[in-house]
Image (cartoon, rainbow, N blue to C red; front, side, top):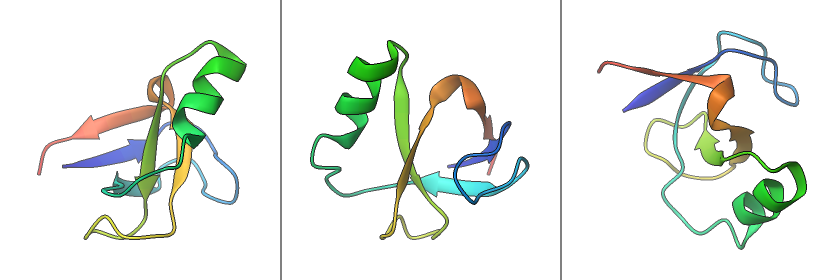
Length: 66
């Protein structure tokens, strides 16, 4: 599974391809959701799902077919 960013997030420009992060986020996704009121997802630029990761609102990504 992979995602395309529909908006810039931190240093990652719109159009960046990212992958689901597969480890614990230590509550960062939940913190962002509580702070903003919108659902977030944890992504990484590494295809294997490894660190580092970042959070982004789900509405700011497009799920792509593999």
